[in-house]
Length: 347
Ligand SMILES: [Mg+2]
Image (tube, rainbow, N blue to C red; front, top):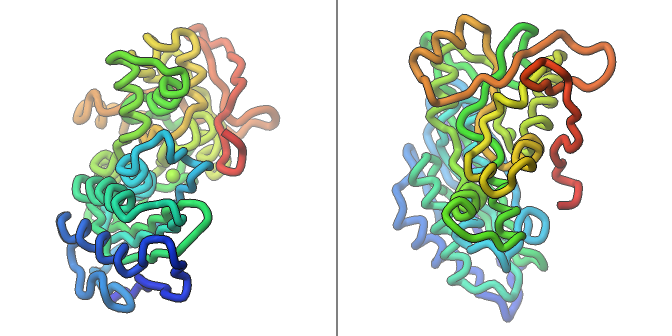
């Protein structure tokens, strides 16, 4: 079954004074041609649309946009990091469905003061991430814009549980499930704070790396499906805010134990007591947050020890009050002041 997707040029939107659109597309095509080709491409960049062959099963699709001044600042981030991160925010959503990345379309809005070499560098960030995690670029669009933005759209193929394709969902948590998370939480906001505060040294640099070069949990997402996990999402808006989304979708509540949240050592060394609140509300960690029955957790721990941390459990839907509560090591409820950020709010 072929899929046809629109791609490439809109000549009427080309302004004089900015890089010629066709010159820019040719330069970007060279960057893409230098990276590993996407699989199953029938028609790639250069035609009216890309054409790829697909097999039966479940395909997932996602898109995400990064806008200068909203999601990043051009003065502060390298173009390569902007490309890497816009790839990873999409790859992470594919991971959160338990799928493998397939094909990518990239649309960029280019202001007059952006050079062809800037966009080549950004595409090297994009193609670097797709080369490492899958999802080669098969097309896109270039438009002029007063503000730089990049929109990535990505497809993926669902993993299989017992021979049948299955996706991880937010609405599949059940009371009694345990809650777990891959990796550590809070490194990205720690990196942003380290940049803003002018912190230096090995720990600050490790946090900055987490902020500018996050890693999507592609293999882990597929492993969860293959082992029978059904409920997951990626931590993009903050641990508590994202757990609230799982609880709302599943009509349940959640309790997390503060001392069990895996905070990176570097965050604690740089920010002390602020580390935990930062981790709970920070966002952009791109780890997987998932729930699973107790016996399944036992099996997963036996097979994949060190890959994830148990941080709490799912409860019945609360009659009133917050869906997500945090307790200290004695089980006493703690105050959760900052619950994450939404994309339409200021930061
Ligand atoms: Mg997501």
